[in-house]
Amino acid sequence: MTAIHYLGVGAGPVGLATAIHTKLKCSLEGKKVSVILLDKRDTYVRTHGVRLEQAVLEQLVLNVDTISRSILSEEKFAMYKALIREYNAMILGLKGNRPIKEIEERLSAFAEQIDSLSTSNRMDDEGFKILQGPEYTVSAEKPLSSFITEYNPTIVVAAGGYRCAATEQVFGAHSVRRAFDKSETCF
Ligand SMILES: Cc1cc2nc3c(=O)[nH]c(=O)nc-3n(C[C@H](O)[C@H](O)[C@H](O)COP(=O)(O)OP(=O)(O)OC[C@H]3O[C@@H](n4cnc5c(N)ncnc54)[C@H](O)[C@@H]3O)c2cc1C
Image (cartoon, rainbow, N blue to C red; front, side, top):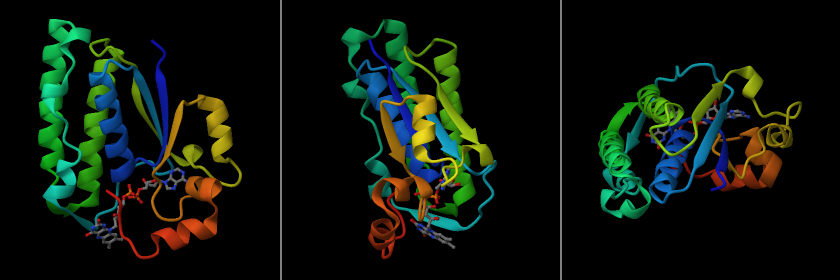
């Protein structure tokens, strides 16, 4: 089966949650997905509080009963079931007001766990890499198109937050700013 190559710009809360959710959901349907997330920041240091409501988080929960038994071996079925339960508990555990750094660290730790299952071949699947640092910044000097040429993705997801160069390069600066002017988040 052809793998889906997912390239995400931004490994903040939205970029991480979207990529993790997509990868797990596709895996349950027997689709192979490799994920690369780019982020201009080396580490998670922001400490402001973010309030996440239960109703929002519930939309990210995955239903273990939808796992397709026919495409998975007994061993993989059990592994996915345990992983999805752990994922759901982690997502619902983000409820309430907490430092953004904590949300990012919990999500990125889960992404690393998925990566280790992928690279050790326990998931019928490819890896989940978070590439962080100035060299992974989408900018006028290093535009999104150059990362697309480098990683050859099937799908590109821009989740770089407010005023991200990647989103501006696709939609234009003016329309992006106007769309986000009155909202705080899309998590
Ligand atoms: C003081 C304060 C209080 C807040 N309170 C709340 C609240 O109560 N509730 C709420 O929902 N929101 C709140 N927010 C907003 C909150 O920070 C955002 O909702 C949240 O960060 C959005 O997540 P995100 O992943 O979309 O974007 P971000 O958190 O901005 O993440 C984007 C990521 O993309 C990376 N990135 C950006 N541009 C590039 C690029 N060109 N190339 C590569 N990587 C890039 C960034 O380094 C970052 O890691 C608050 C913000 C502040 C400052």
